[in-house]
Length: 189
Image (cartoon, rainbow, N blue to C red; front, side):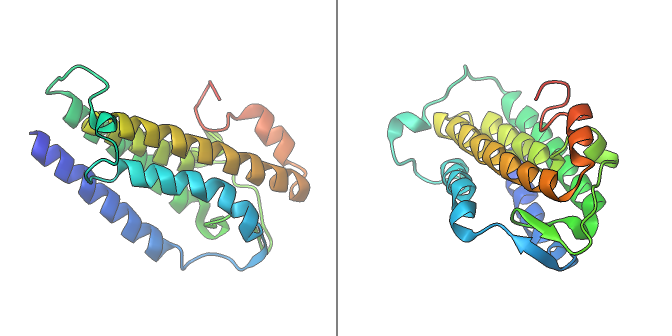
């Protein structure tokens, strides 16, 4: 069961990445994009998170040690958490449509999307991906995977702050949206 669940998680990550690359073609033209030096602030955390969660021989043996007592349910449970996360992120990406960007950006005729998953949290793609990382970390049960979750979460928070500052400048209705909707975790943050 563990081998199958881990294979399913790898397949979900691969399918998600392929979908993401294909979906990136159908977006509106960009009128403003965050400068590269500012993008690097969050991309460093994403890159380090991806490095630590990818299956490879660990850089430090202690980081490959388990952080929880063994349970046969952990791997399938992690796969389920990851699947929920990927599903939420894909739903959000589909719902966002042409407004999506791989960087902090404003599109031509940019409009606020506050329905569907965006009525639940302001950054549902990040929420979904964070769940996918958490599910992967649960299934792998290694300290380095837990570190990856922390690194990616830090990158998401930094990016949220940057995106929201730009949205507040460009869209007067964003403040009201931010007051009624949590950032990444429903009812909490």
